[in-house]
Image 1: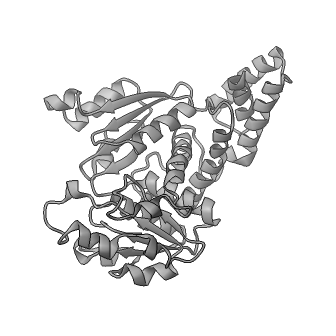
Image 2 (image 1 turned 135 degrees about the vertical axis):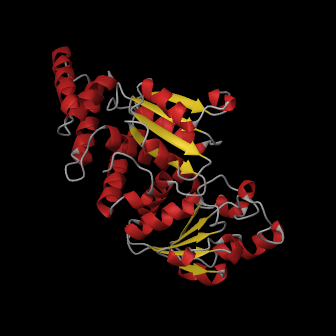
Length: 364
């Protein structure tokens, strides 16, 4: 993988599958009494958020802490940014404090790209303006694969405010890379001018698209980014492009409904749809932690594309080690040896078996 994750376009098919496979293994932690691994112990992750966020910020924080990284949360409000400090000076300050990775959300498109040129650590784009949000696209693909068993060949409809949506851009790029067929559905005023150059189809008729869709992803109308009247009224928009129970009935039986959040219930999605069995909205939040753990591990843990031994064996051994520790099968001498071996392996980041001893240590 690359040193940074700025855009979904930076990911090859192998890169994306590596992240999804790693996330699948790390998701097993959620089922354990101790949901933590010391893989990034001693590393520092900074969450640099210039925009309001709930899901993404907390998800990255939880992901880093479950990997035992030290986390610094930075909010523009109440910081020196309010006094006029530039992004570059803030970045250099964090660099001086030893940040190994910076997770940035910024209102300006391109800010993560600029930041990557100023710091030596890894930069993860957590959303920049109306540009991209690659980890959201990864967790969406992960959710599709978990629910439907695959991403390749799926027919995905992305509906709503595409013009202002960084989620839509990242999903189009990533899902196309993974072999899905994507259709954007929106009024002409909420589609980008150059959308014809995107690797997807475009439709203005939601009802015509739904019967042949495996996944429908609803997007929030981002009124805070709008400086003009893009549609006559909210009521008319909801009637033409909202997903209610009647429209959900048009979907094939196996289809799922997604939303990156936050939702405007009663506008782009009806409450009965958001709370239905087809909805994956809560699952997406849970899957976001696993996917972001995978991203941080692969960026900071040092797995190369062809040699990611993290796979099932590594985490399988971690689970075995934890169970042995719980059962009292490992004595103190073995634990000391395990810690020594884990230290050597962590320094070289070679092999996958090191996770077993580390997980056993945490379980104790």
